[in-house]
Structures are given as structure tokens and as C-alpha cells.
Image (cartoon, rainbow, N blue to C red; front, side):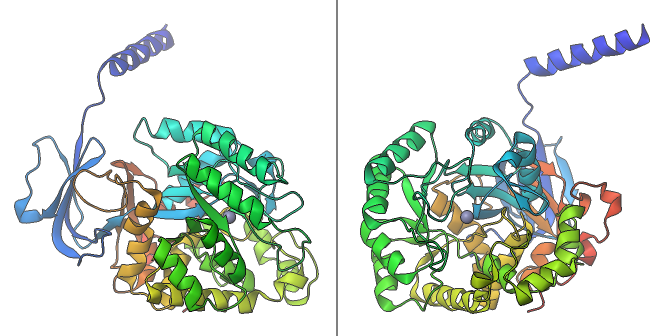
Length: 477
Ligand SMILES: [Zn+2]
């Protein structure tokens, strides 16, 4: 009887709350330094007011007017920046170090999206490996105030038959320009945000590469459907050809040789974006021993099985000796030996694009083997700084610049009217970009979500060490 009464009371409460519109609750973060994501100077002694998930005020504490019932969080000494946007990820495709489409379940996707959020990555653009349920999830998110990273989706990308790219079992390879157009039409009908295509032959290890007639048809059809097209590339010549065909953005840096004035001029003239330079991706593959394997900021975000595989001598041996195809590595040694050169070429070309004034976003290609959801976004910011950008510019690339690429005016900066997607930090990221790891709180649409310092993948949080105020220095650059 007791249980019955309790159940009835709970049911009644649920019914009442379903009838009432969600109260537009107000939370105030006060005494913070605001780095608003636009590149404007940091504003100390500031306050941010969030009502119903949106920012309603940002400015000096002295000018703060908040409703009486507002929840006030005194965050003296802390720093607030917009939630990070990672413009190149893949979600829900791994179990430990094994990649397979069977792992792309709603449960795994949710786990990844929560993990991105925990690392302060409040929006992700998934480039071409989504099952259809991800679009449903995205549609649901857009009707509400999400508690995990927001999704932009390119649905299922275009891979040439027998060529590089995609996710076996999810992407359906094409062979002709007509099939390319049909694929774009199908994706457009599903409501994708972008069209993704892969143009690569994996350093000439695969005899097939998407021919220009096919990529041109895909890009043309995407534009007819008012969608922008973003391409996986490796070679300078392919980048130029794709720009001529009208590509809107690149999902990787040119990595076979130095970019030249011709490409830079073409990209600038047509407003083509380097959406994601994936510098952290190239770096991960050039390291025999990953220097972050004992860093709690990293270990909290990976499964014990992943850690074991990455720490094991088999991985090191595979990187140094090859040609083993070890599960923790994406390549056989015949390709892998070239990764050192690749990471430096990518860094050099990133510098050249920034210097030339090409539109640059921030993206990591996290999700597949060796690239870690959330963690890699911080590595990427550090590598942007290593390549010569200021911490302010790195933060801007990952926030307002990426929002501009996505074409979403409701996210990417801390301004009145935008969603309250925020990362609160213990230490100043403008002093040292590695301080983006000192995550004290994360908000998505005003919802406080667990940070990486409060969670631990596949095990209780108590099983993990470290904390936001003792965050380690990150990558030794
Ligand atoms: Zn990718």
C-alpha cells in the first residue's frame, strides 16, 4: 500500500509538471572573466545571466540586474568561454579499440555526446558516418534544451566504390556521377546539414580514388539542394580540383606537400573553409608512445580496455617496427612510417592558411581509433597555438568561427540572445591554452552537465584521479 501511494504521488507530480510550461528559470554566473568567443578582449568582473537556456545579459557585475528568484553562482576567479564546437567528428563507432558499425547504437552515440559535453565540447559536426537515427536525435535536440553535445550531421557521406572513406555497413559506395547525384538527393531528403565526400587513395595504397566527374556532380547536386559540401582530402592537387568544382570546405589539411599561392588565392577568392585541420589526428599517429596515457584528463575519457591496448607493448612495437596492423592503429606500417612528415606538413600548411587569411575552423576527426572524443579538441587547440596562433585566436576558431561555418547564429559566442553553451575554467586559457583543461563547469542551453572531472568512462567517477584545479599541463609543447 505504501508503495502504491508513493507511485500515485509520483505519477501525479509528473502529470502536473507535464501540464505546466517549463519555468524559465534564471541562473547567474557572477564575478567571472568572460572570453566571449568573438576575439574581443577578455572582460573581468563580469556576470552572465541565463534565462530559459538563453543568455539574457553579459556585462559588468556593476550593471547586473537579475530577478529575485535567480540562482546566483559566485564564480570569483574563474573564466568563462563559449562551448567548444568540434567541426569534424564521428560518433558511436568504437568499442575499446575496435571500430565497427554495429557499435553505432543510440546508447553509444549518447555516451559519446555526453562525453563531448563533459570535455566542454557543446556542439559537434559529424562528417558522413551517421545512421538515420542520429538525424532523429538531432531533430529532437533542436526542439528542446539538450543535455549533451548538439549534433550537426552530414548523414551518410559519398565514398567511391572500392575507395577510401566512409563506414562499412553505413555508407553505400557509389560509382558514377549519376549515383553521386542520387546519393545527395537522398541525403537532402533526410534533412542532412551538409554533404560529405571522400577524395583520397590512402597514400596510393588503394588503386581507386573518386574521379573529378563524380566529385563535381556531388558538389553541384549539393548546391542545387542548398547544401554545402565538405571533402576529405590529402593531396594538394585534389584540393585545387575540388575548389574549381565549387567545394565549400575541407575536412583535413593538405598533407602531401606545401600549399602554394595558387590554392590559397583560390580558397580566399571563393571563401572556401579549412573546416578542420585535424592536426591532433596527425599527431596521434606519429607517436609511438602517447604522452598522455597517464594524464587523468585523458584516462577519464577512455575505457579500461582502450587504456590497456594503448599502454601495451604491442602498440609501441607496431608503430616502431610495423607492418603489423595493430587494432589501436589505423594503418599498416607501410603508411604509418610517413606520419612524422605528415604532421609537420599539416602544421606548416595550417600556418600558411592562417597567414593568408583563409577561413579556418577547428575540427579533430575524433571518434575512430586513436582519436578521442573531447580530449582531442583540447589537443587541437594546443596544436593551433603551437603553429603560431594566439590562444585567443585558437578559441575563436573553435567557437564563433566554427558557428559561422555551421551557419548557426544561435551558438558560438557569449552574447545576449544566444544559447547559454558555456565552459567555466579554473585558470586563464589566454595565459596558457592548456588551461582549457581546467574545466570547472559546462552548460548547454543553460543546463549544467557533468564535466570530465566528475565522470569516468565505463567506471565509477571515484575510480579516477585528478581534478579541475590540479589539471595537468597537457601536451608537452
Ligand atoms: Zn573523418
